[in-house]
Length: 147
Length: 340
Image (tube, rainbow over all chains, first blue to last red; front, side, top):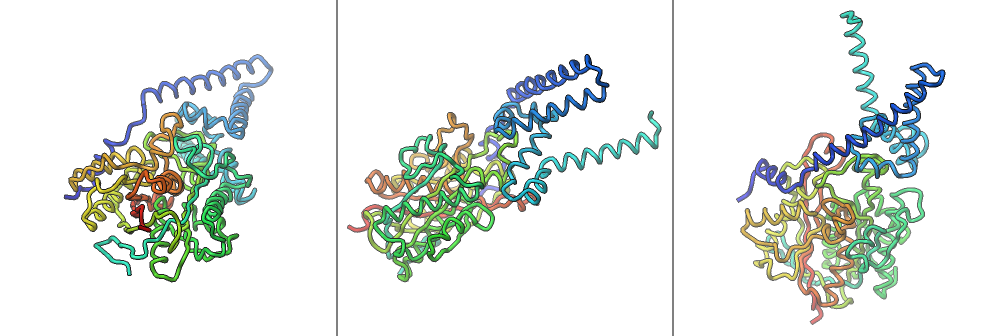
């Protein structure tokens, strides 16, 4: 007798081990929390200088992006992210890593059609949907005068 | 003249295994089979500036070593039959071009080692070819780049994911020669697709094809699993192996448990080397066949074995278009004692 696709799907699901969700969540919380606390610390420290709030926020993000880019380039970031999961992916570190890793990977295909063209293959959708969402919310705020 | 029994081809010429060689990377060398491989290249870039070029060099190294172990000259080789996972099989074509020998490119995803052995066996069976090389390769980094995410991308692999082997295997097949190990039967597989969509669960996608090929072969030949010293599947990994045994028992009432081994489970220490469900890629079954399995046949550890390399025939395009993953499995029956 031959089994149906549905039945095989259930067999395959039973045979495939699940990701350790609780452990993953705890690790993501700890890593993500540490990154955010570090960023908050930077932001607070910049508050003691004569920087404006806007400038200190921007500088904090630039520092996080720079650290991520360096860790990605020297091949350490993916080893941390393997454990951190969403903890490194959700903050701006994940966004920076997705661009730098793609840029590095495709440099063998040349600077223009390799690095430059391919660096947004992962981050591209984030930018598209991020900008689209911003536009939609902008319209809602404009037409309904929420502010 | 070869005979057909169902889908199984019984070869009359009994192509001999003249020689064989494997070339692998650092991680494979650190695995349980480390000492059995011929050539170890710890630097997986092979000194090249791209992973694709590096993969070609692994293939070239395996073929060169196989020829040198055979006591044949390069000019004695009539054809090289090879394939790999990269688009348009560039791993093979760029690795082989310098040999200046006739080349037959094949694509069977991770089943390529068995497919290239089937093709070269039939070439020898025609009588027009004396010495043929069947080969294949894969590289972890070039496969990740093509099928998944950039190497340095910080993502998590699910427990069912497998690790692509960096390595290559090459067999010199001849009308005569070698140490009495030959190919007795071959069986080209039928595509099986039971609707698996998850490209991180290749074992589940390929297990039905392996089951179909093994069941058809046993029925064509009227044999049972215990007639063989071992039944080696290519790269089903832990998930696929479990599913193969379950499907075989449920659908055919055949218990493979005592003789089944999987190259994907043999090549790495799954826990210590963090490879999740096991090894995969053309080079997985290729390098294990061209080291542990064929050495075992030569030494007398095995005398009659089935080698079933399994492949997942999807592409990044078919996956993005929501199509399920078709599996394939080709079988080669190796025997010892063909000169007697």
